[in-house]
Each structure stands twice: as C-alpha cells, then as structure tokens.
Length: 309
Image (cartoon, rainbow, N blue to C red; front, side):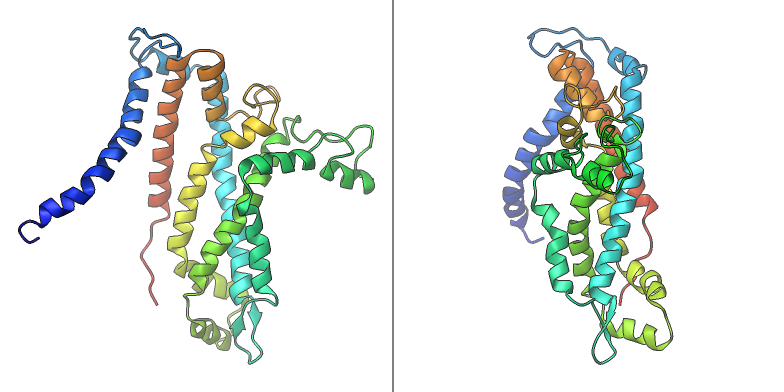
C-alpha cells in the first residue's frame, strides 16, 4: 500500500469492526462467563461454580435427547432439501428439449419458479399457523381429512401428527423442507443458468441420458453452491426453535413428553421458566461449539477441486 492508505483503510474498518466486537463477540464472551456461575437471571449477584454446569449438562437426559433430535434434523433436512432443490432446478433449466432439439427447461418453467419460491416469502410464524391447520388432530385437519376421505383412517380415531412420538419429528422436518426447497431451487437455478448450453447439447449428441448429464455435468459444476446450501441448512437444523416452540405441546414446545425437544427449546425453558440462567448459558455455549464443529466438518467433507468451464 502507498503511504497513508493504511490510515484510510483503518478509518473505514474501525467502526464496523468495533460494532462487531461489541454486539457479536462480547455477548459470546459474556455468555461463557455466566455459564461458569450459578446466575439465576433476575439476581444481581452470583457465585462462581466452575464447570459444574457443564458436568450437569451432560448428565441431563432431556438435553442429551435434544442433541440427538438435532442430529436427526442435521442428517435429513439438508439431504432431502438439497436433493429436491437440485432435481427441480435441473428440470426447470435443462430437463426439457427446445424446439430445435437443444436443451431447455420444461414447459412453463418460469411459472414453476414463482410457485416453488412462494413458501420462502412466508415467515416461520405463518408457517406454524398454516401447518398447525394441516396437522390438526381431528377430521378438520387437511391430512386427516384426506386420509378419512380415502378410508385409510377412522374418523373416530384420527392421527395426532404433532402428539404422536413416532410422527412429530418427521412432521416438523416436512415443514422445514417445504419452506426451504424454493430458496435453494432459485440458488441452484441461478448457478445452472451460467453453465453453457453447448455442454449439455454435446453430451446429448454423445448419447448421455438426463441422469448422466445431471451427475457428470450439473452436479460437479454446482458443487460450490451445494456446499454453501449444506452449511446453511446444517446451521438451521441446529436451531429449529421457532417451529418446535410454536407447533408442539408444552412450555416452549418439545412435546409430547420431550419427543420433539431440541437444544434451543431446553435452553430457553431453563433460562426463562426455571430461572437456571447460568445452566442455560452453558447450553448456549455447547450449541455454539457444536454449530461451529458442524460448519467446519461440512466444509471439509464437501471440499473438492474447483471445476471451471
């Protein structure tokens, strides 16, 4: 840099870096400090207890069960969402044939993009209300109404989707996938549109099928976008607070009988309801560490050589 440019750059960076340190880094440091105390949340005084909160944390069956539920979300939500988004994006961009025999999207693809993206404009609070009606545990719910009409379910004994331990996690996953597919479809579509059509047309001339074109051309060239989607969906799967707390039974959700519990709901219940704020801060630190580990592992696991065209 030329003489004097250091001051110029430092002047621009000082305020954003200071704001980041004050409003992002400092709360993390405070949370870790509180996690080493017996802070009750309302009191101004608290005692240092060291790692006692962390020791109790890993003996807490409810919290350990919540970690397992987050792991299930972490496995299934990114995989299902990305696979569906990739399939629909491929069909909308290279799934059809043009009039001259070239490659194009399926008929009406521009309208499908709008339809698929529509769920993304809805807030999670609206989704909770919407799918609360879908999963209603009587004949008035959409799913139960359809099943009753088809004769698959007895009208006197409908399925309680959000109160049945075997169904509740899958019902919540379906909401997240339905909400996320449209966004990642648009993300992948934008990346696919930068791939020259000549590559697909040359593959078709050489006898490649649509499946071979997808796995040999589309997926390798979209790998950076897939990696980004995987990390963001993994972070979302480690949260899940809004949907679980609003759609499932119990204080801050988690029902029935903790079968839909996630780390964030256990943390908020201990912080706001039980007054165990230091203990809840320890949960927050564990959530932060696990989320960072997940992000690093996903980035490392999906890293590969960059393919250019």
